[in-house]
Amino acid sequence: MIKCRSAPPQSSPALRAREEAGVRLAPPVHVAAARPASQSIDALRKILGLHEKASAPLRARKSSDREVPGAEISPGLRLIETRLPMAAPDAALSLAFAKRHGESVDPCQLLFFDTETTGLAGGTGTRAFMIGAADWHLDSVHGDGLRVRQLLMTTMAAESAMLQAFTGWLQEKDTVLSSYNGRCYDAPLLKTRYRLARQGDPISALDHVDLLFPTRRRYRGSWENCRLATVERELLRIVREDDLPGSQAPAAWLDYLRGGPALNLRRVAAHNHQDVVTLALLMLRLVEVEATGEEILPFVAAP
Image (tube, rainbow, N blue to C red):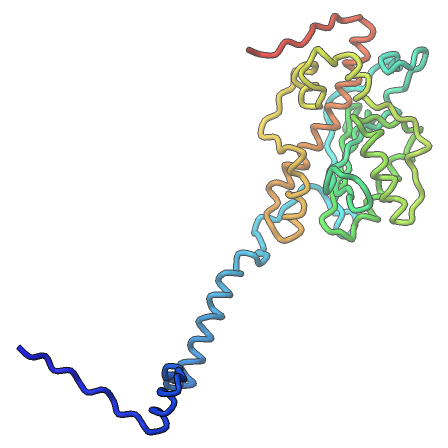
């Protein structure tokens, strides 16, 4: 069978002249037909719709769970107050455990405090969004017991009011502060916030018994570390349930400010409450251990 090939297209004289001169021509360009305006608009809407779907998860969504504990005492500032049936010690507490021999403190002068902050780095960019404090207090209604008060900011603008409220607590009596590493972290942080808020510093003039250092001196080498959770487990026999780690507190607060649920913020408040109660129990235990000369067993890691 003979296969017929189609004859090549005839070229114009000008085209043949260029080919003979060795000039190569670009292939013809096919121009697509113009798309109707309605189709272009539909395509644009589709692209915009894809962008909207992609960005939807980044938008702040208002959660239905916005309930936080306490009563609002100022715009954006809440006070959480509870009382525990733990009577104040009958006698002054010796500070020999803190290497302050011959000194003692009236239990009702003590204010155990702890803060929850937006980070652990410190500096002017870090602020406290919660201040918790516990003290032995005689109340006409509730009687003698440990009073736990917590100040919680639910807006950034409430910081000045929170600092003023804490100042009022410090001035209620001849206060002696007590903390766990508060001398190096919590107190300097609050001093910075007072200075930035153009308020007087009510902390520097107060006596401060930091329980971290005597605990570390006595139990270093006996425990794997001297974190407060370890102190609770080894010395106080306290085991927390459903405790939110302090490292997650900044995220819980910032998520709430963005409209997120309040569940983890309530857990932060519970964590802070236990911290200040633990400080009161720890001081009593350190006084007892110092007085009795309790034997310290060396730490042995689990196999």
